[in-house]
Image 1 (cartoon, rainbow, N blue to C red):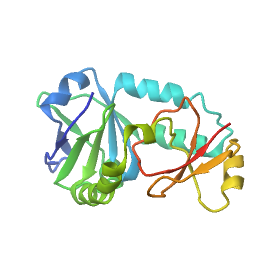
Image 2 (image 1 turned 135 degrees about the vertical axis):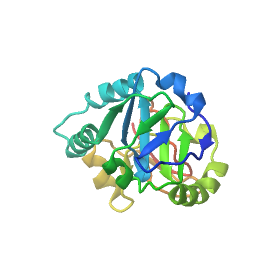
Image 3 (image 1 turned 180 degrees about the vertical axis):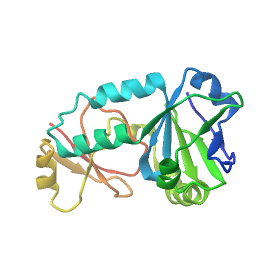
Amino acid sequence: MFLGTYTPKLDDKGRLTLPAKFREALEGGLMVSKGQDHSLAIYTQDAFAEKVRKLTEASRSNPVARSYIRQLGAGTDEQKLDGQGRITLRADHRQYANLERNVVVNGSIEFIEVWNEEAWARYSAESEQSFSDAFDESLEGIIRVSVVATGIEAQASEIGAPVTELRAQPRPAPIYLRPADAAPPREAGLVILERE
């Protein structure tokens, strides 16, 4: 499990020293990929293999799934920690996340995120109230499939989920389809579409 926030420096060669408490879990190797919100995601090899296993169950006839799988595969780099606990971030990864000398490394429970320092400060400030307003039960079972608020029924039917109930939470945000067996996302204050 990866927890905490750290502020290491990125050196001129693109090397990043990972927090000491994360290193043991990453000793067998790690995978660096483009993450959400223009951050980088660092996975253990086992966690990344599990993510890929789940993704390959998706139909490649779905253009969204196909695009995501392609981007993930093309945007992932296998790495090993050097003797000083560093990894070298590829130039395209540094550009994608707009990484400069000052970065933020966050534990994100099952993986690690690497952020541009200013981007993290903005994101953190914007999402702090939503986090404060959320409670565990309100996030249970929500999946990360966003549906545009306009044309809800048409959008929902395109991804194969009949809309049976629309229930507003305190702070309307993206709309999510909610099957009973789905894993919770990191977002809070959601409008939820429930499946039959």
